[in-house]
Length: 610
Figure 1: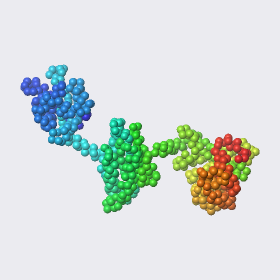
Figure 2 (figure 1 turned 180 degrees about the vertical axis):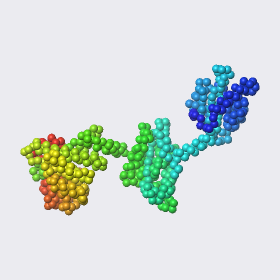
Figure 3 (figure 1 turned 90 degrees about the vertical axis):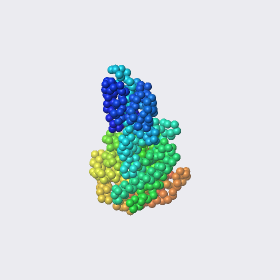
Figure 4 (figure 1 turned 30 degrees about the vertical axis):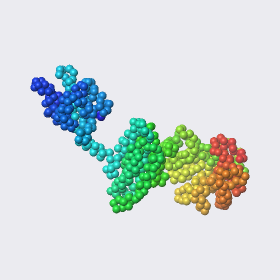
């Protein structure tokens, strides 16, 4: 290959010295060949090459280096002696130097010595000066230097730089070098190649505990033992392949197995299974029996269009899934799951700012009296009008808002907007009984804000009567409440605000605890209503459960004895509504009455029997 000087020998200086001495000898008229004295004096192997590329003179150093007789060098093709024609680029540069069109050629070649060993040589070819000023060159001077020792030192240094000292596996640098090379078009655009690439990215489960309790020395020995087992797995997987999987330690307790020219996900799955099985066997380290497992992210795809960064990001994401799914397992990259995760991250990044930009809106779902079918109230349901993803339901972002704390400002906005709307309906229909508005409250709103103060301020600003506001909390959030949450609920109840338990029956279901809570409404989870057995209806798609009706009736009766009203969610058919009415349910909510709708549609429903 062509390149710059690699060895420590100052080749250019020696060439200049040889040329200078040749001119001095020629000028002195000694009659000796122009370069004979230079050849004899220089420790560097050299030859004079004519413009046809044939050796006209050479020194004994070159003959000794190449392992041939000095006499046999004269008349030989110089390019053949040092393998200059093995690649097109070097050959063309050499021809240009011979023609006087290029000043110099420097390259490194691997030569085969007649005794069987190989050596690395640095070859330099430079033009000679003509006999007269400005005349044509006599030829070129070729210098050959043995740089094998230098190359060997470089190789040893590179090995140290590219391998992990604990496991002796390729390190992160070498891994990415191999990965980048495998993803180059030339690597997979060859005949017979599948053009695919696979990666098993693994992290040890429980390694930190070993390191923390037994120390880094034991931890390092465990890592070395893990590396041995991974190497065996790779060797077994590579028996039928030209290129066995590359095993590398990427840092800490993270390892990777790179499969070039993979045959599909089945191959990667088999490799991952073999790794898990190998690591489940206990390790004997420093007289201790240690156990670890691994979580593995598996990615397999077409190499075309894939970059190292994208592949590793996919592998890292999939490894996280394997950890989250329970550890000691492998998980295959799922584009749809990843797209959902990316969307979730995008939503989380813009959620708080979206509140300030006014991207949220409220829809309202009617709460209808089971007795007379009239509208009694509405539940406010927030929607996010996202500029990229369209209208998003609460299940897409409420969890994110609770995680990052933006549920507090969002909750304030929902509460204020719903209260203002309730007052607007009341003003628009003075002849109708006012309807109440029900607003969902997250537990974090109770802990991270002064909910009582917020509610009091908003009621005062909007002039809404407290009894026309209902706050809904989930059963799991309310049951077991003590300290500040219980105090806040009591303060809100004393203010006149109705407190409702949402999705009742899916959590603790501790009815006795209700006597100590300032609760006025139970909202039965829709699962109970869907489980009813209906007379005269096709229920093939729903497994009938007569016990549900018995349970619901018992809960309604007990709630009434405690002075509570009951709302049934997910009422979808007349039969459901009829049975709920018969067993004493107070209000219903569901698609039988209406889906969540705009405020204008609620105005149209006021005064209308369902």
